[in-house]
Length: 209
Image 1 (cartoon, rainbow, N blue to C red):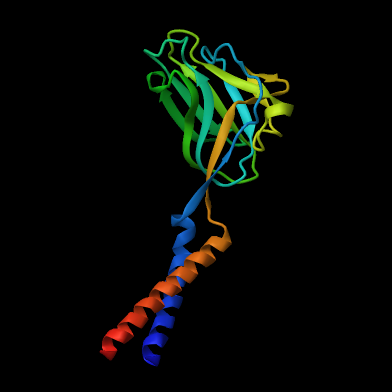
Image 2 (image 1 turned 30 degrees about the vertical axis):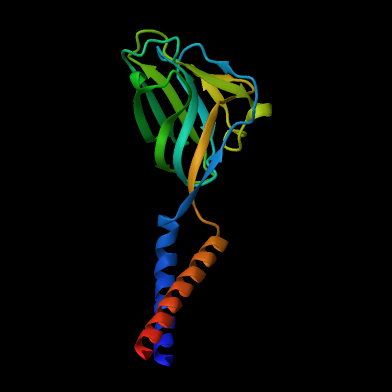
């Protein structure tokens, strides 16, 4: 009996070490940062070189997605795409995505960035431009800064065609993938120990018969 429980203790310790090594990468949760409720305004066009750019500071390093409110009801979606870029303070392109206009919903929050790792606390710029469109492209919304800014955008600026839009932030949400809080790992570890010792107990009873 003592030998079985000693083996269970060693197995539990090994299983917990392996779990704590793998869990932060494998077992994660999502955190979403959104604008507060406010009235919105759209820019007239993001085509013909009129680029819309928002500075932002991510709270965590792993971004699952960034969503932007896009209204494509009144534009042609037969041709063209949205060129999405994230650049750092040195203007180096860290992420680029070409989203076909045909793939856009008629309106609503639309993922424009997916699965990118950035340094939390650093300043980046998200830029949106409609390319090869038949008209002015979709309308993209912004909110008043002091009312609706989320944490990522609160210290940044929104520029349109190279001009700063005063008191404005992009209508956007930031979804992160983050490790579970430490208390969750403790619960998992206790559950692992419970399972291993339960199996050891059953093995002992089986051998005893």
